[in-house]
Image (cartoon, rainbow, N blue to C red; front, side, top):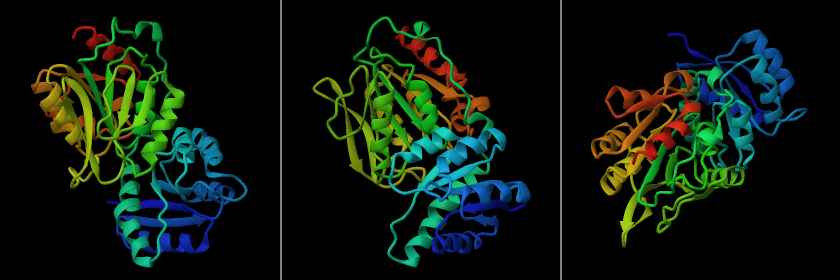
Length: 343
């Protein structure tokens, strides 16, 4: 198998060289070129035809977000953004980046090497498999066809996603009205970014969205997003009402929070009064949990291959029989309401 050709775009000489040295240690990676700014990068893309580009957001002459907006329509290329703690990363994902990593505030070379080995390399390899044509698909929905008859406080909607999921989740939930049953969601994301993502969705959607805390009620017209880091989110029932519990725990399927943990809790607590949605993402996190939901009587939806950025999690779930309905991304909101109206 040919190594993945990588272009590194980073204006810091020291950080750029450290990236190159450590990425080059992996035989599956070949750094074909480096650039200090988007203008250099543009020429190097044409010259080297990289498989993946790593991109800093803050760059001289043109920022990374503007570069993405100009680049992706002309030269579809998987891009992994390296970002400091800022909601600009979501602008980058909206502009066409496949995924992002949080730039480490490292105090030692060892920490930086661990970051590259355990985070950046993984994201690059996943990005190399991504379907770029699916990143910027326009979602067109007829909202008047997508309303339930009543809000259902005894029903829970559970959503899980990974690579490509930030935009996929937005594409789905922006179509939901305030009469949608309460939503619980896991999107694989670093700590602190989940809070910014929740605030961003809250500003852009009709439903209310927040990063989850233990004791938060699962209410119609609201969505709770599991915080990134070292805690899992589970659905619980307290005095007859749905709540979430956010507790520390080991990684499951390599992730914390894990979609698996959330879905399994929904199967156990809500049973047939639930609807599960599994969206784009690498690996199989959430597949067994979605199967548990279906066996408990819940309705389940999986994103189809043609609209996934990475057809991993939905494929594993579909192959094991966890997915009742496989739908294109822009059809999922309407299908969700159709199924809710039958519950």
